[in-house]
Image (cartoon, rainbow, N blue to C red; front, side, top):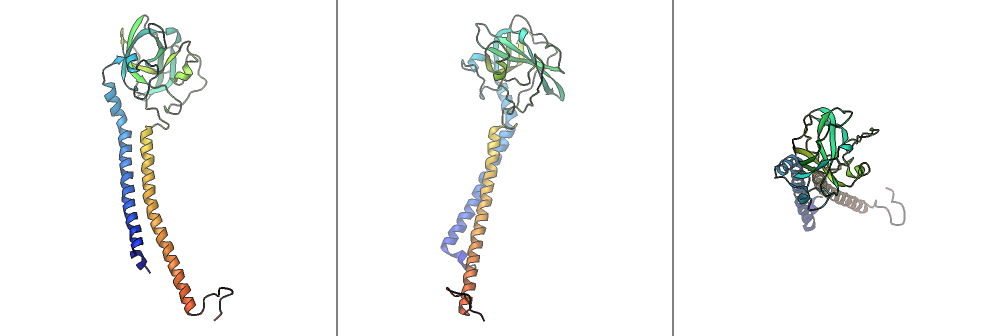
Amino acid sequence: MYRFLLQPRWLAFHVLVLVAVPVCAALGLWQFHRYGEHKGSGTVAEEKVAADPAVALKDRLRGGTAVGGDDRGHTVFADGRYDTAHQLLVPGREIDGRTGSYVLTPLQQPGGGPALLVVRGWVPGTPDTPPTAPAGDVRITGRLELSETEHGSGIDRITGLPAGQVSLISTPELVNVLPYPLYDGYVALTAQEPAADQGLLAVPPAKEQTSGGMSGRAWQNLGYTAQWFVFAGAAVFLWWRVVKRELEERREAEEAEVLRTLGLAPAEDGPAVSA
């Protein structure tokens, strides 16, 4: 019954499956390894980028006004004056298990042009008014961050906030709040001349903007991992199903041959002959 499995075409089929299964499994393991690298490399990459020397904002953005994915985490400096009349609080931000607010202050640069959103630091709770920003000319140094999105940043939107508070540091939303154009993105302050404000804690690096809280490339690698293991399983299932069907057809053919030999096979134009 099983001798057919040794026929040349079946041997070729076995070899094909035996090659496909380990290849798919190996590709799945490789994609899972890549997933682990992307998932765990975020902090290391951010620390490496943050260690780079500060460059002028306009040089880093190559004369543009949008913070891109390649710019995120790089340290820049910029000169200007804080617009203390349009400071904002961003409540619901946690540091070391404590809930507080980011202090967001626009920096207007010499010569006009877009203002730069600067997160000067974090304060516990939600004060009635933001801590006062330094008056006069300042040079700020900080870490570039992307404009926040509701789903990609992993931050829950807070509704019903009073005037002077915003839920997200979202440039598309803030251009409707502030009376001038803005850079797309913001700077998390790390140093300031004159010295930074007392009582404000530096904010931690923002999470990478994703659709689910994890690197998009990591999710992609995880999806490919599942895909390759599904392919491996499908190859085994296909082999089993094809062999099973062939066995069933051969058994049916043998049973039909036995019935014909005994004269019990059903006639082509009528019912089977009774014993």
